[in-house]
Structures are given as C-alpha cells and as structure tokens.
Length: 282
Image (cartoon, rainbow, N blue to C red; front, side, top):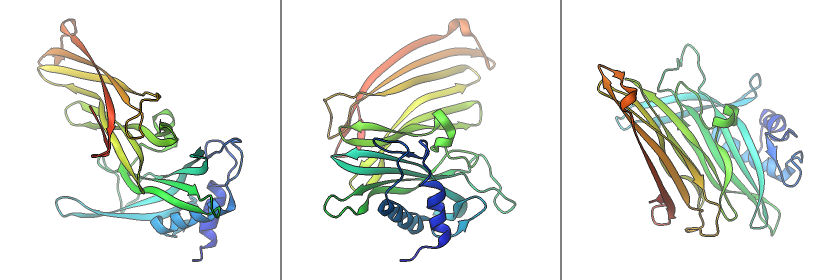
C-alpha cells in the first residue's frame, strides 16, 4: 500500500520529533523511532483515520459516524494528531504506546455544545523478535469523551490528561479522570483505566471518584483518590487498587447550606482484577 507524501509528513512532524513529551524512549528520551515502526504507524493512522491530511493544522481530517440508542445518526468531524508515543520494554521486547487525539472541529456547520465530545484512540505496537517487524498488538481507535468538544485524555491537558503507568508486572495502561457537569449544580468525575485485554484495549476500571450536588434541602460532596498498589500480589496479571473516599453531607435551608451541621464519613476499599468480566471488582 502506498501512502501520500502528506501522511508521511504527519509522521515526520509528530512522531519523529526528538522531544521528550512526544517520544519517551528507553534508555534515551531523545532517541528517534525506528523507521520500521514509523512505517507501521503510518499504516495504522490511514487505516483508522483515512488520508485527508490538513497541511495547515498538521492533522488528519476524520469524520466519526455513530448511531445513538434512539436511532439518530451523527457525523462529528475531528482533526486527529499523534498526542504521545512512549517506548517501553515489555517482556524483553520494545513496545510503543501511542495516543491519538483531537478536539471536535468547530465551524458554522458544526457548532459545539455542552454534550459535544473530543475523540481519542489508543494503540500498542510490539516488535517481533523473530524478524524485527512491528505489529499492532492491541488497540481501541475511537474513544469519544469530554464535554464542549474537548478531549479529556490528551496530554495537552497537563496533569488532567491520561498518563501511561504500570498496571502490572510488564503491563502498562492509561489512567485518568473523566469530568462531567449537569443541571442543578451537579458535577462528578470517574477514574478510568484502559489496558490491553487480548488484541483490544478496554476500560477495565470505571470508578466514581468525586460527586457534588447542591440541592434545595441538602448538599452532598464526595472526594477521593485511587492508588495502584505496586506489589507482588497481583490478580490475573494486574496490580490491586485501593480507593479512598471522603463523603460530606450538609443540610440546606432553601438551598443555603448549614455548614455547622456538616457530617463527614470516610470509606476505603480494595479492588482486584476479575478475569471473567475483565474488570476490577470489590
């Protein structure tokens, strides 16, 4: 298969930049990607996002089509870019972890609203020891997420973006939080882990980490954190998780909180990975 000059330029401008935030290689962060890996990445990008290259924004124009449970079909437009590529050694073999990301394109034909989402894709590439060729070992190319057309996974979000971390011995996954807000002063966040299961990358943990509601008669707030316990006691190849939560309930009079009557409770529990459901469970 042939690839356009524009698509090759996309890889030159993004994947081959010798900057630590784009390529984190072992042992040298400034090391460039192998030519064979770049060729495979080109194949992946064109397979899932086409070859409509936008020279001005240095991205691939892509239309994500989906149908809701109510039968309505939408066609959202994006400008997909390589967000990050991290190189690790897994079971003695070079492995690349790649995130592709985009906010929704906004123009007169596609106005952005509260329910508009960004789009991300996650890919894992491994180098075969027998012939040195790179192959796509696991992926999930389309993850709609966020609000107001913004991706919440991208590293451009700084500390709020999803991070690649060790989730088991010789196993890596992406973790981060999805935030949401609704009417009536309600907001919440979910801590999510994406990890490889076979040839797919799945959300193996979805934990409500915070929730706030300002009601007429009561205000409630929950805040917490998740810790990946890097221990030898793994469950089906995954480290256990520990969740710590603080719950606060404050009575309200006609919507105004009576803070002197706030009650606080604490909750802590562990989760282990269940191979049957491919999810973390209590």
